[in-house]
Image 1 (cartoon, rainbow over the protein chains, first blue to last red):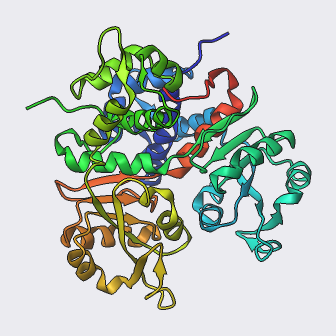
Image 2: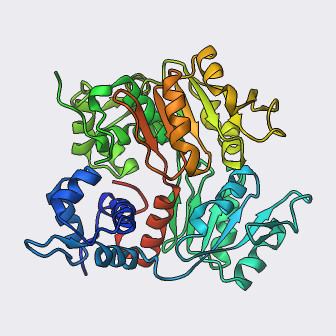
Amino acid sequence: MKKAISSAVIRRLPKYLRYLTALHEQGEERISSQKLSVITGFTASQIRQDLNHFGGFGQQGYGYNVQSLREQIIHIIGLDRPHRVAIAGAGHLGVALANADIFNENRFHLEALFDIRPECIGKQIAGAEVYSVSEMETVLREKQIEILTITTPRDVAQELADRAVEAGVRGIWNYAQTDLHLPHGIVLENVYLNESLFTLVYYMGNWKDYKGFEE
Amino acid sequence: MKKAISSAVIRRLPKYLRYLTALHEQGEERISSQKLSVITGFTASQIRQDLNHFGGFGQQGYGYNVQSLREQIIHIIGLDRPHRVAIAGAGHLGVALANADIFNENRFHLEALFDIRPECIGKQIAGAEVYSVSEMETVLREKQIEILTITTPRDVAQELADRAVEAGVRGIWNYAQTDLHLPHGIVLENVYLNESLFTLVYYMGNWKDYKGFEE
């Protein structure tokens, strides 16, 4: 069995994809790891090391083919397969996510939203229906939802996650600002928006450390 | 002049703060770097190295005092000072952020929102008024806003950022999914929510790499 790849490497994949997509849109056909380093802020050796985890795609003296590397990263992440998603909580955040480009680009399919407020139920949001939370398991099973996005208040997040996992969901994208306990085999991704704001505040007070990109 | 601290270290500070706050709420008074390592998923040596950048707060054989380390990190990030924030875009995402715990906890003060839609202008959201974008510079100056959160469509984000900087804003918290070009001295923090979803999808297809925490 191969050694597990560190989350730092994995979290850089979407960033490579973003930069490669921009290069591709600008009509760039190839890029050296040095140039990629200037754009991304990652060192050239880190880029080579990162990509070597997945097979290494560069050629000595040529660099990387932008479109081919982009497609490889899409494949590595798993964005070349469809993913069926639902959102628990049709409040402002749920509706914002439903309407965001996230679910329009790539192969994510928003299939349903869930809420407890009677005035929301039955509405269409970004092409998906809002169902009562009481029907959640049935809808998740019928629509074979893989990923549940949780945008509810934190006190109901664990219960909703448990019920979703019971109904076949394998990934929880959690905005409820609380850590969830999930069974083996289920992937949890917590989004803590305040951490990004805190980083901004740190740099505002410590300009010397600011480089304008992530490492 | 001290060497710049890498963004990887800086981005771990809010995570330390989150774990230390949880420990503090559980009544824990001290913690070893080993135990902190188990909770956070960072290695004990990484934790020591990270904190040494800011002075090092542990004592040999004692570990860290939870409340004191927590207060130090709050101070290092700059969360012990007030921060005056506004939000451009009073759509679903803007309203979700305005109502999120982010601006209620800590010392962030949401002072204003801006929108172009006449039906939004004059409304109160989370205790702050929605102003017309045409008044933005005046309001930003009068209220001495430091941070502008941009939740507008991407095609107006650069113009709004430029105008905000002109009016004294020093940090841009950007949800507009587009990279902005800002003058020297201005801090930009881009939020790409899809990157977190992509990480979730990667782990769903590569369970062997999943550890349930970040490194």
